[in-house]
Length: 276
Image (cartoon, rainbow, N blue to C red; front, side, top):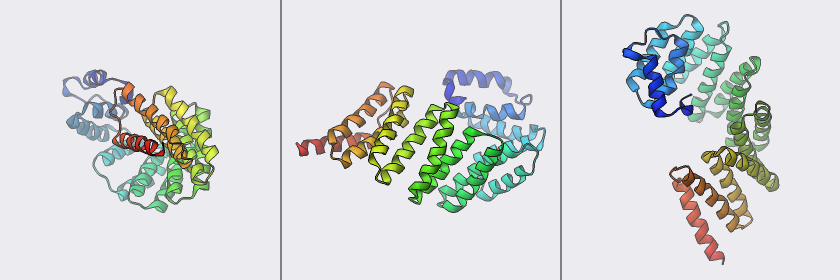
């Protein structure tokens, strides 16, 4: 929700809900729901109060679990604490969505600690729970993590299997951003297997979506991959054009051009001059 409103509007909504500094009348779901808005306006003090209030105001164990989850995320909870919360949540009636979310987060924590196998175990369990409740968007996020784990191990075939399923779900849900991301990841895996033609088509489809969505991150990922393929074939001008297009989008949107992009454009320009 925070990404869909301006800073001014976010402040207005938060003020309306917490007018007078009182949050006693806010229930747990609402308190947790406005946390992204409060984060977006940078009110750290109110953020802490809302997280504490959400735990106190919870009307059942599931709400307490969601509140505990948010508390742990914002207070450097340990991997063991998240694992314990996930275990407890699975035993609750209607606790599957909570357990799935906690297990997914637990998997990401383990992945950040380079515990790849353990991370996959948690994410697979999360994915199973999300399948059971037909949380298809959540399934896409889980498959994305499993794909990432496979790519770390350079198991490109497994990565492609996960990404194919991601892509199918994203298309079915008409989630173009998730479709764009899945295509770029599949393209990278295909390129790593030497399937450069297939990779090029997928990167181009991802880029077309990024252009339509005016998504600078997606545009950068896809054009970077296209440039990689062009460089392999020594088509340096094509690589330069792809990345220049991305730089123009950043400028059009009033965003700072990433340093890595500027450096690569400089290097490609120099390389093109040497080839001439």
